[in-house]
Length: 266
Image (cartoon, rainbow, N blue to C red; front, side, top):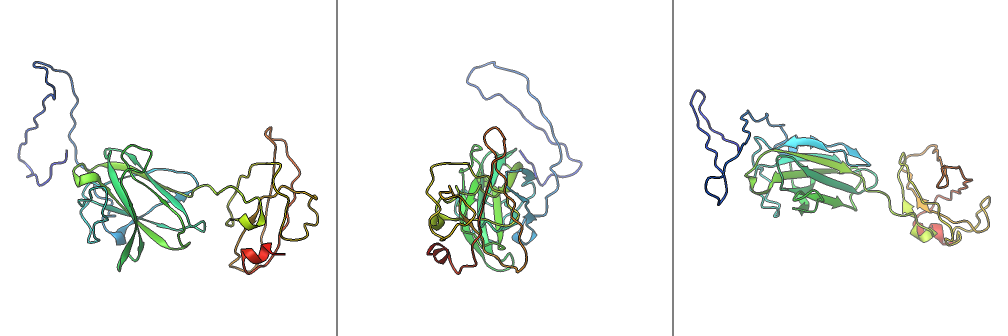
């Protein structure tokens, strides 16, 4: 419990009792009293804390001690009653994010994501209550985002009656299975590593016409990228079997094309 509005120098009493229907039951317990930590300062959208994005979930701990309600309208889920804190992330080139939370002192939370401007209009993107695998905590799975946009993340304790700590992380979901035909090519971003299963019996290359140095019936994994800046590009590929023994790998690059359909048409 958190007691606020206390008067310095006054004496306060704490009463503890058992919660049981058995008369005369007793036992040992521990009690500690301390001062709540100072607020982080991320109590409003424009003072949102910047979260780190990774390819795996790396939780960071925050708290809601001292948090107040925001002027942004209620998100409409998880019994929002104020006491929220704010975070922000910049959408990576993948255009997809998973924002997860984990229990601390807070064991039941809510979370919402917004687009827009912190000092203008924030548009509710999604609100969640209990989607995380971590008990009654929220998780947001967001796709089809615009790379470079800033998302604002709002977190609160369910009902705002138990301020405390919680963990939060932002990760990029794993890439989808590589396309086995030109028409199902998957996007990828520069500086990102992909692990593709070494498969056999897949459709032959198809589409794209001549495949030159490749074998006559390759088992392909198709990707495409949109180049935004003129210059050189370095592509590194390595492959190994289940025992870690290196295998021969070939690849071909076609382009530029105006669209995926144009690339696969001839």
